[in-house]
Figure 1 (cartoon, rainbow, N blue to C red):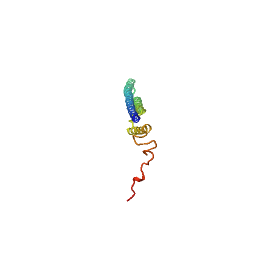
Figure 2 (figure 1 turned 45 degrees about the horizontal axis):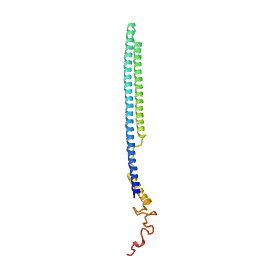
Figure 3 (figure 1 turned 30 degrees about the horizontal axis):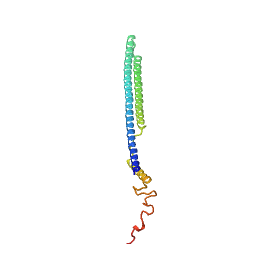
Figure 4 (figure 1 turned 90 degrees about the horizontal axis):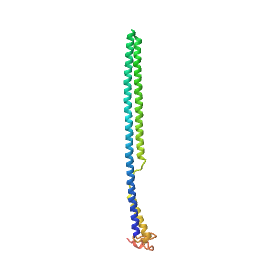
Length: 194
């Protein structure tokens, strides 16, 4: 009888150990998830900062370009006035300066747009990396109590058969036949009269 209880206790300890392992696995998963999210957030903050810096640099370049174009246009007007020159050639020269400014501004806008698109793609990549890192560890799965219960019952029956000749559960070494000479149901047990 003590072997049967020992078998049940062993299965109970295995269940508790499986529960502890599931808790440890879940804790490790949660810790990894938190670390992955923090790393992702830090990288996205850096990318956002880079986007802001690039936007500010582009705005400054546009401003510098506008100032330079204004200075060149005004210098051309002053030079034309001193030389006593006027007309279409002076206007064309000033228009060329304005056209160069506009082309430079368009180039700066396009470069900034491309850079911001690239940064958004990098953010998506960082988020995907974080998700992959999170999914790289399995979550803790609680053990199935029913499976362990069946295992404990099976071990108890097995120990009873092996060490007690099946006395506790009424099971002999050859099956559920009691003394192994009488069938479970005798034909005399049924009354066939109606």
